[in-house]
Each structure stands twice: as C-alpha cells, then as structure tokens.
Length: 312
View 1 (cartoon, rainbow, N blue to C red):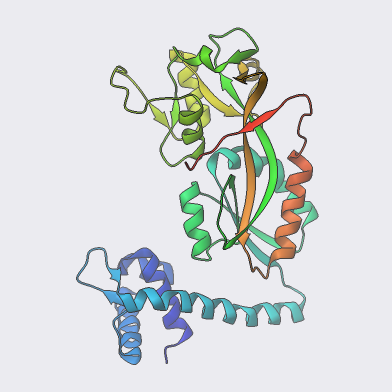
View 2: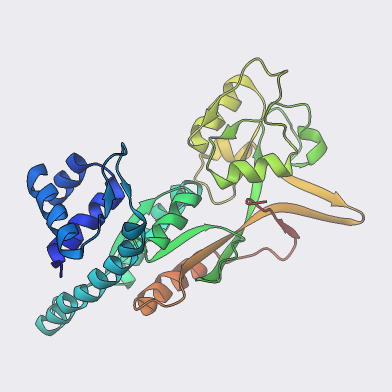
C-alpha cells in the first residue's frame, strides 16, 4: 500500500489545494511531491485529486480516504511519543485555538502561568475565528478550542470556563450604567464578519446591517481600532470586561442594563472550551482548563447576567 511519507504529502495537498504550496510545506520539489501522489493513486487504484479543477479538489474516493489517513498518521505518531518517553525527553504537544476577542487578553494573562505550572506540555496557540476553529477541530489540527458559547455538538466535549460581562465603550454617555435604549441613536462600530461578538452585538442592540441611511461606516478586525473610531467619530462599540484597556479607556466603559418586566440583567457571554469526546491528551487539557477557571471564574453575585447567543 502507500507509505507514511505519501500519506503526509496527500494530507498537506488536500489542505493547500495547490502543488507548489504543498511542496514548500513538505520541503520537497513540486515534481517530487506530484510523482509520489501519482504513485500512491496508482497503487490504490483510484484518483485522490481532481486535477481538472483549479484549485484542485478531492475526488469522492479522496474525501473518504483523508479521514483514514489522519487516523493512521495520528497512530504512527504514538511510536515517536513512546521513544521520547523512554529517553525522558517527552513533552506532550497541545494545540489550542482561541477566538481573537478572547485571545487578545487570555494569552497575555495565562501564557506565563501555563509555562510555570505545566512544564510537561509543549503548548502551541493559534488565533482563529469561530468557524475556522470548528473546522480545525474536525480535521484534528487542534486538540482544544476556546470560544464563546453556546455550542451544541455531540462529537465535542464542552466545558464552561467563565462568564464575562459585555460593556459599552461610549464616551458620549455620562452615566456609568445605561439602558439599551440609550444606544438607539448612536452609531454602532462593528467587528468584521466572522467574529461572534459582532453577531452578539447585532442581535443584542437590534442593529440593521443593511441600513442605507448610513453614508459612512467601518468594520474593524480588532476592538482597539474600533474604540479609536468611537473616540474620534462618536458612537459606541461593545467590549468584553476582561479586555486590556488603559485607565482612561476603562473610565469610558458603560454597564448596560436590559429590562425584562421586573428583572434587570447585564449582557454577557459564556466562554467555553471544546475538545473531541475522545482525546488522549485529556489530562493536559484538563490542567489548562483548570488554570483558566481559577483565574477568571469570579462571577459577581450582585448582578444578573444574560448570556448572549451568537449562532442563531
């Protein structure tokens, strides 16, 4: 059958969808990679890639083959782990992905602490949007993802980390606590599409995305830039409470109250960790999770939090 090396080439090519880029990542020439993939197809008796498409695509056979290749490569990796353990040089590699609006503060807050307390782990952190994280988990490119819930997926284990109040950055409003109605006549500054905080803001503030009355707008990739737009042009944007701010910026945050009959609640998001139901790295993942929970899970008892949805 096909070799481990050929499996690695096929897997990289299936992800990159072009021979030149795949060959660069595999550190071989393009003709070498092309020849090895073609030989694998001949040995298997079926085409794995449809080369008539640009970029190339997996055939139906290829789609069914790729998950099997991932499983085989994952199993063969255990041999290297065993050897390193016997040599006493093994560190378990843990790959976690975090959405940008959480990574912006959590990585800075937790990285040194993780290094200090979890010495047996080689930690790799990637920043991706929610949909990208879910794809990476499905492809087994990540061991765990940290994002805003809720998320219902029977294939994934979901662990609540902490709840985080969502505040309004709005210097033009002077009261420290405002109502949602106070934002109605102000221009909203939104994160770019793909950020779940954008969806939460649109739903919570009842923003119409196709408002033709706006002759000016900007959608940014990070909260810091949106706050600068607010400072220079007015309006407001929403900011997670744990986001790192200067003292002057924090003074311009406003707590938002939503009224539902006699109840008053503040908007919040629930931060969760998700990982495959079956993970050989669960002990390491659990240790990472516990450190995050201890550091952030300090829910205030004097306020009621209303968790926002982002996927509906």
